[in-house]
Image (cartoon, rainbow, N blue to C red; front, side, top):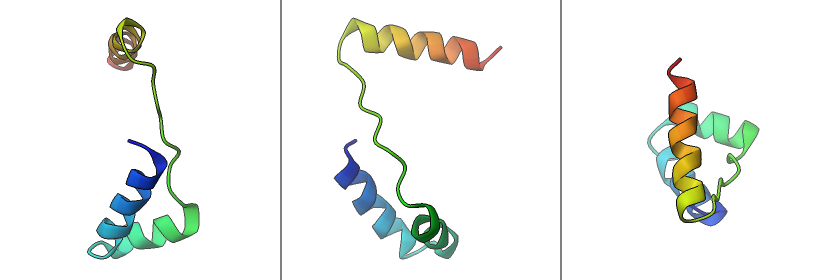
Length: 54
């Protein structure tokens, strides 16, 4: 997801969730996390999941 997609999604969700709307106004959108494609991204995802479950 790129930054524009994240912002559009948060704007739409803010219309139905006032808590999210408040947080979005105060904190802004989270940064887009764009990972490289291919094996490096797959390996990073697997290692991250393994570490988060310990």
